[in-house]
Image (cartoon, rainbow, N blue to C red; front, top):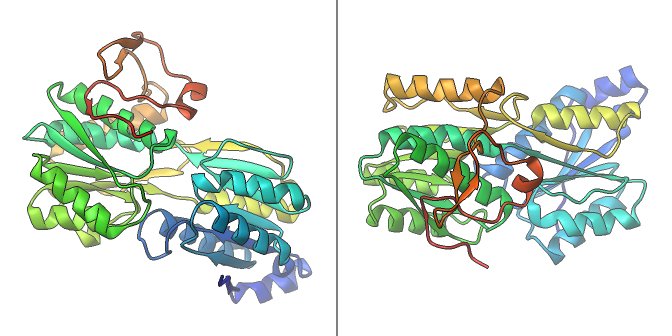
Length: 353
C-alpha cells in the first residue's frame, strides 16, 4: 500500500501562526477510485487540496482502494500511523471504518454516504437526488426517442434514489418517456461504462446519464451523436457537444469545516446531508444544445428545491407496478429515502439482488 503524503508551503506559515497545531495535524483520505477519474474520487481529492490550501495541514491519501478487506487494512494503517482525522469516501467502507474506529478511539473518522455512527465516527453525504431531478426534467424536455439510458454502479439506496428522482422528473415533463438501466457493478471502469453506453444507445436511448465516475459514457455519447450528463464534476471537456450539464459534488467547504473543528476541539460525531441549498450539490453550466426554455425550467426547479417549495420525492408517486405509494402533497421522509430500495413507475427492469 502506498500512502501518498502532501504538505503545502502554507504549513510553514501555519506553524508560525498557530504554534505548530496545523502542521502537527495529520488528515487521511481513502478513495474508491483513482484521483484522475474526473468524477467521484477526483472531487473528493479537490476537497483535500482545498484543506491544504486553506489550513496548511499535512494530508495523506490512498486511491483505488477496493471495498471490503482491502479498505479495512488501509484505514487501519492510516489510523496506526498517526493520523488524527480520516475521511473514508465510499459506501462500502462503512463497516471497515466502524470496525477500525472501535480500536482507535482517539482517532476521528468521517464516512461518506453511510449511516453507521459512533462517538468517533461521523457520516456525511450530499443530496445528489436534487441534481438528478434537474437533469431528469431536462431529459424529459429534450428526448426525441422517449428512451433515456442510465448507467448505474451498485444497487445501494443512494443510486436507487438517483434513478427514481431522475425518472420522476423525466416523466413529469414527458409521461411517455422511460428509463433503461444498465448495472455495471463498479464505481469506475471506463470499459464497462463505455459498453453500457453503447448498449443503451443501441436500444434507442438518445440521452445518457450515469452514476459511475469516468467520462467514458460522455465520450461515447459524443461519438454517437446523442446527449449526456456529467457525473460529480464538470466533464464538458470530454464531450463539448454532448454534455447538457453535470451534477457537481463540492466537498471542499465541508472538509475545511471538519478539519477546523478538530483543530479547535469542537469536533463531534454527527450526520450531515447537504444539498443544493448548502452548496454541496451544484450544477455545471448548460451546454450549447440546451434550449432557452429548458434552461428556464431547470433554473426554476433548482430555485424551488433550494427555497423548499418543491421536493423531488413529492407525491403523487407510483411504484414500478403502477401502485400509488405516495399521495398527492405528501413527501417521502429522509428515513425512507435513506433506505430506498424500489423503482418508481417508468423504470424498466429489476433491481439486482
